Image (tube, rainbow, N blue to C red; front, side, top):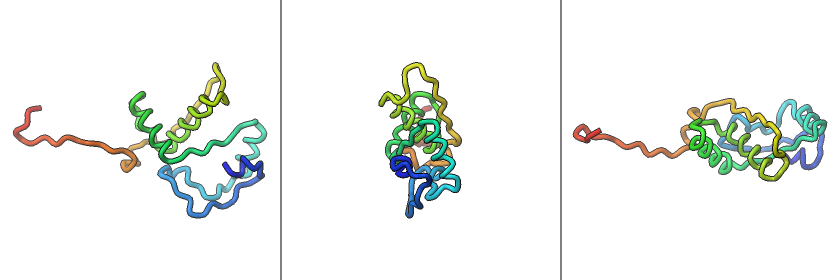
Length: 123
């Protein structure tokens, strides 16, 4: 995000980077210069998503679609939602958002209250 905002040809190493979406936690991407070049060439953009926003989107998707997406996928959906709300994605445009993993790999990202039935409880 910072490299894109500053129109740099490559990113800088981000020490102590951390996120619940460990699949997109890349302190210095090997091909960052290629990604940035593609974004600049296509008039694309970069969007930074906070963990809380990603986890909220994960809950929204589960509630609306019944899909337990991974935090990385939820971050992509959140970015698309933000771009649509800002008008960057226009009415009538088709956007594909990829989710590459399941939320089941991240049980710590959700709070679940599971009722416990005792032997004498009615079902």
